[in-house]
Image (cartoon, rainbow, N blue to C red; front, top):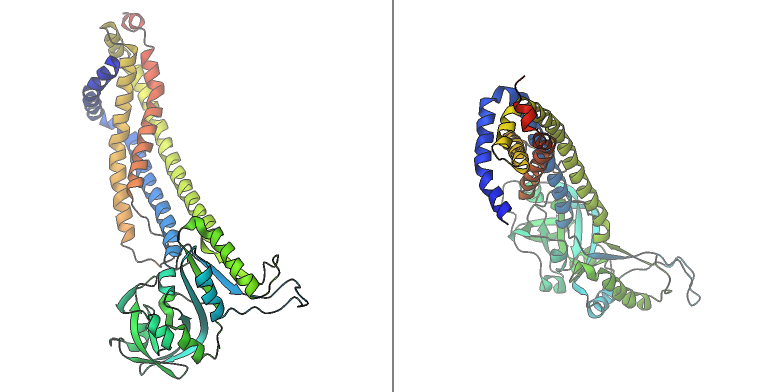
Length: 420
């Protein structure tokens, strides 16, 4: 403990000596400092790009829900009770009611049917669009946030009211600068009142037919009437209470739907289930891997500058052998000389690194001002980026200084002070 306290007391005066040494020999350090500055800026910029890429993918999934399970009817692949394979499985409202009663692991359960190439008409524009006919719970599962007005509710769904909610891009398309709330839009000749506009989501990674910003949302009961669907509901979306309950949710879903549709227990193709979390996990791992790769590239660039620092400090030790010998002759310990050279190396690295980090932050800020498409990742400056950059700089400083410091500790005072 006394040695540790003594080391702490020495740090400040040694750092001051290191700064004085750096100022007095700034020309000799100039080229090395340039390498450190560039390396530190590269670390910040590359780590920021890695963080930006990961955030782009993470948000791309979160915008449409990142943990739900989707179930859709397909075709049977096994014979059961004399029924041949190939029977079409169509999910309907009875299935929806049974799932709501028999899947306790689900926080929300919704049904949706999407219709493409539907003619949407207003006095301003006629255009083909994608319609999502759904139950109100879908707004929570697929993260539909209302910007103006409201989303349709349980009563709208129960009575099949002719109401519609527009994606964020559609008000300007169909109503120009006019306020869309309360106005009428015709879908395949059916008039519906616009009751809400969704908040803009931008680019998404999990969509069936179109981006949510370009879709129109209506109650499922109204859509069933408009498109002659009968009781068919298309797909069911189940949102678990927790991500780790996905397997339990799937088992409960299977226990409800397989007996209801008289499916063979081993027939996994009759009802297709897809968990978004299983789809997004490997892609997010790729994002983390890319983030790590970019950080490693920046670290290698900074490490090359660290080699220059190590060479500079070795030359400095050779030039200051008499000074170091005097310190040893006056009672300085080997550990004191090691600490001195390490601190001086850290001063050089951190001085150049601070300037490089500032330049990197400035570059990130300038790049963030550029107009780029939604799918192009922009660098993102996070506290973890700055913390990692600092740790890398300290590590490079210590690794660059350890060899010169050990060389200084081996200085023989008698040999260095001998007059020849």
